[in-house]
Length: 203
Ligand SMILES: CC(C)(COP(=O)(O)OP(=O)(O)OC[C@H]1O[C@@H](n2cnc3c(N)ncnc32)[C@H](O)[C@@H]1OP(=O)(O)O)[C@@H](O)C(=O)NCCC(=O)NCCS
Image (cartoon, rainbow, N blue to C red; front, side, top):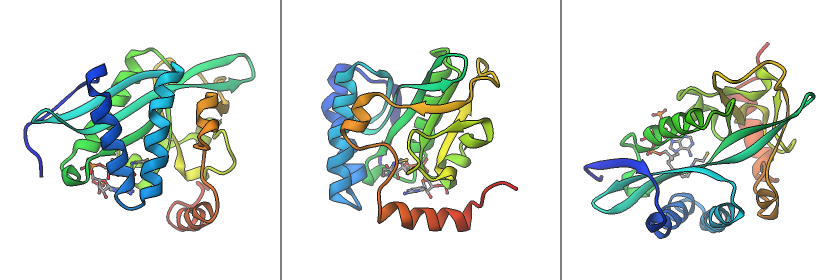
């Protein structure tokens, strides 16, 4: 339990705290997952594709973080600049207090202010579906990899989105360098089965 939480745009001074909270959050259940996402985000930063970073701070400690970075939609007419939300992290001792929800709201707002047409992500439809996201495929948006289950590839559309902006989403090279698009077996097979049961394709 943490108290007096402030949400604000991250500064360079927060980078160490951010990298720690990512490793702690993703590593809580799976140390390898913590290492993987913990190594990815500093490289996304170094690649120059970060669009926004918001931190939740309590008593000078970063207890939550969300990253928004660049991706593209490979539409028939043109390549469209868009944004993706990843990663989202709350420190294990600060979870369940609404920090993750507040960070998602901040990421949606930040991406809207940047003027892009959409904020995309790969994640739990149970969590993000209750926070304004819907299936990308219902808007003609395809995940960069077939290894992302359809129900997990989600989007919030902004005012600038137009119907012709349908197509496959493209991630910058750094996500591939870290093998961070979609999932791989056996996690993929497990999640596909779970999602097919709980989130069947819309009829
Ligand atoms: C997911 C996460 C950011 C939520 O942060 P939080 O500050 O606890 O979020 P809130 O207090 O606003 O909301 C808690 C919600 O998280 C849900 N939640 C926690 N872990 C979850 C998980 N692995 N998958 C889906 N939902 C999860 C809870 O069920 C609750 O949802 P509900 O309110 O809709 O019932 C946090 O659990 C975390 O950092 N997890 C590890 C990293 C991760 O999985 N990030 C998301 C990747 S897409």
